[in-house]
Image (cartoon, rainbow, N blue to C red; front, top):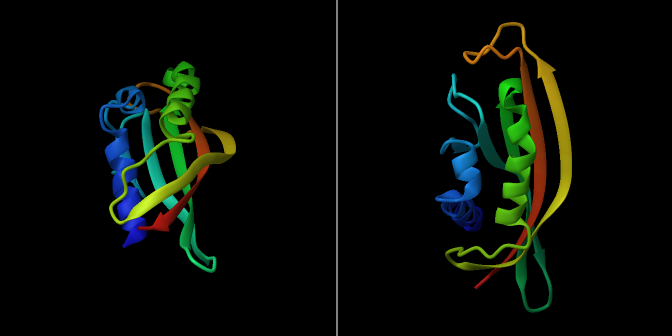
Length: 140
């Protein structure tokens, strides 16, 4: 249940943020609906590992945020990335049943893809930035 609570906390932090505004409220857990317009963001768990010390139990999760935009919105991608960093780097999260120990960016991969058919905005390319965050939590 701890991971579900972490995902809920991430979703709640998106609300009313600059990043949510950048993507027009289009942020989704695991997968975006077919036909979603760009820009948008998808976040998901890449891995989750329990760790124990003599007195504490931790969960170390790797969360991936995928930022997507058509080439028509290419100039927005660095802003979206900056807003993601401002929102989640070393952030505070209110997680039911757990305490966030640390949340920090660990990796960024930038991709660009040519499309066979134009998007509704006329673009023939898609930008995709995959940003990984380590989120370490401890049970309360």
